[in-house]
Length: 231
View 1 (cartoon, rainbow, N blue to C red):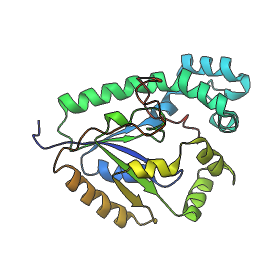
View 2: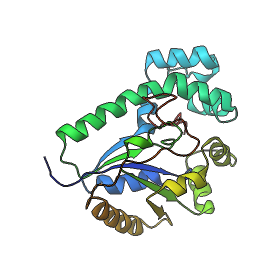
View 3: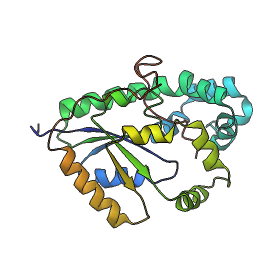
View 4: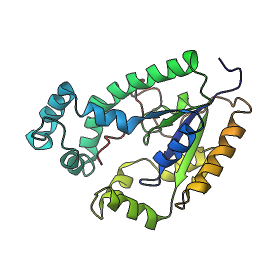
């Protein structure tokens, strides 16, 4: 096991700003990545989860093959705050929380990886920023974010709908230890990630404080910062 400080880094940012691209740059340097959205995508194939989603939102959110229809679910969850809260609090967070606790334990006890990246869009809203040593915020020009959202197959208004359902962007920026502006250049991201990893591995920072106004550690102690991963 390495004796160097190995930070747990919370990766948050704007919708469609390229957080996954940043996470991949860390991964190329040996870091472990916890991808909350990928975990949720797998959950939507689980029979028990599908049955719970169908019971909560109706048959129209289930595909013929028995998986969750993410587009149909998005139309419900990202237009109604109450329904989004039901989905995350009752179905998503309890399951992703268990996965997060597992990878944290393995990272601390079994790994020599230089860092663990928590790619979890709603890290603060879920009350899990407390497990992070550092917070990295990823932003991008709105024109690029809109372009990237359309490439995902979203309609022209979907990005804005999702942004309105997430927490205060400025509050997250204030809590961030660094910001990467993704201008579309992979070389720029690689340089930024290289510098950040070197700097943050140099010494152990103090444990982070909760985001003002959040229910960190109270509402659900096993939340894991995943959005419903509806792409």
